Image 1 (tube, helix red, strand yellow):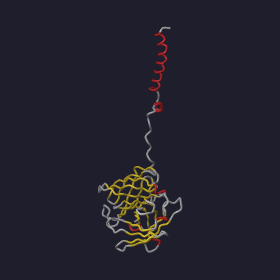
Image 2 (tube, one colour):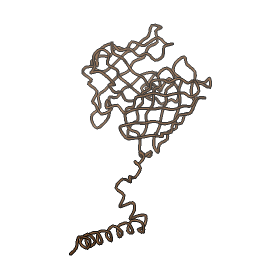
Image 3 (cartoon, one colour):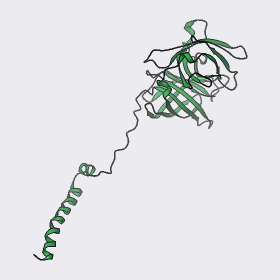
Length: 268
């Protein structure tokens, strides 16, 4: 056999095989093409906005009216209830945060007005990015204000509150315009608070058994226990010593600014 014939006998079937492959790719349906393309990827699925954003959240709220950005902390329990504290601006009481939306009440911080000049009003939140135990971000509108918020999950939500280490002197600075409250927390969890103008209140902090989250906090603002504001508290930072931060959200039976509290105690 000559070299030319040998070369033809090898290349001819290879050429047929290549041509058949090309025809199979170009003549096949779109499903075959997608399956044969190893580079093609499905887009990353979006987080489920229907989930309740349970957890302890920290980040900021940005007002598109004033242009200011405020530090913020938030708490959403397993049933969707909770609240947010936007430092130096307002508090949000949320009866239920689910389906990516929440409607509640906005309360101005003491000695501060909302953008529309009132002390309270309705507020709506819409989550545009929600990933469980990762991120909660979206838009808010209420009180003559609107803007965005961006918060990240804090592992402190899953940690027990070390009650035995909390006794001592704490401070609650509600706003820069209001004298801070000095809070004396006793070993049994009871506390008394007073500022330099003589304003005072009392309350208590109690441990909860798992799977309940955080500690139970109670503020005795009214004349009877029925008027108390009750909620949850979490050790945000530290282990109970100097500089530790205790974040809390508590609601009362009355829909007014006095009976909804959200903020943090800082230990001396």
